[in-house]
Length: 113
Image (cartoon, rainbow, N blue to C red; front, side, top):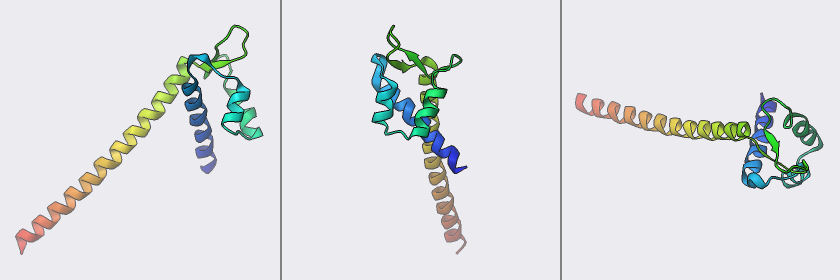
């Protein structure tokens, strides 16, 4: 389970990096250097981001020297951000609900005394 969380982190880091670079793109060497990726992470990114189906990156130059975030990659990042925001909202709502229940219990106890 912990390994999955680490992989998720690298996915999100790569997506955020690509989004920050815009349509001008970046090289995979720049990505590796800027994110300080391990050899395993470099290999994983190279093998899994430039596939032909649902690719996270597109080539941003005709010479294929730079890549940029694809529409699918951007959608993945947006979905992650929406999920993160929904989790934060859910935690806030749960906290408010718990406080409300505690206050109601205190109010009922006060009325019974």
